[in-house]
Length: 153
Image 1 (cartoon, rainbow, N blue to C red):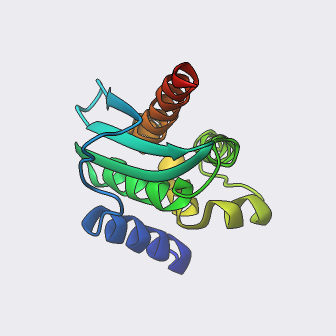
Image 2 (cartoon, helix red, strand yellow):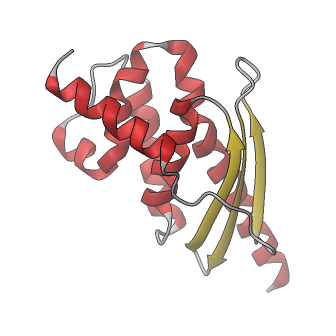
């Protein structure tokens, strides 16, 4: 195992243990429950929006260290971002997952911050759904929040 692989593994394990954003919100603007039927991982993501900014994102779930760490990293990355910025990060993360472990250029990896540690996961197609679970829930929750806010205006 290379030093880089070891560092990536450490980042994933750290996020799996110390989970950013884990919790439940009393009155979310949007919420999404997602399950990975392949392995049983599950997550509920809740968001609060201020305009088009994700002002708060919390989640609760159970599953493998990859899914839990990915959700933690995603929370850290998208909270405080606009919907467009969050969607761009999701696109980059999906591109990383589709790279089959080859990774992305340095500029894209820099934008993904700790999420770049999941490059090795992309070598294992069965694990890609684990890494993407929370990201899909975030997208769904923000879409629901946006449509709800739009109805109230």
